[in-house]
Image (tube, rainbow, N blue to C red; front, top):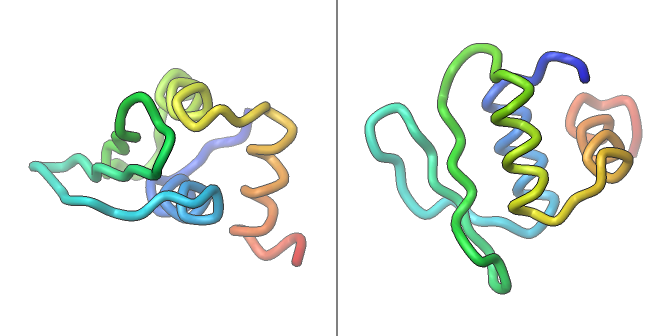
Amino acid sequence: MKQVSWQELRDVCKLAGCVEVRTKGDHLVMTRAGLARPVIIKMDRDLGEDIVRSNMRTLGLSRKEFERLLSIVRGQLR
């Protein structure tokens, strides 16, 4: 999986229907209706693959769907 910045992950979450709830320290908290728990994004330059995968599971996104949304965020798709 390619490196993902916290801003890109935030934008993917927004495309998936999430809204920013708050920040706590260096963590951004996002949620949407129907999620069992909030999505927590560490505001770090490059996120580890474990953090990205954990948030994909929380959002219920497949790898293919996540990569499609990431391509939109990066301007590669419309």
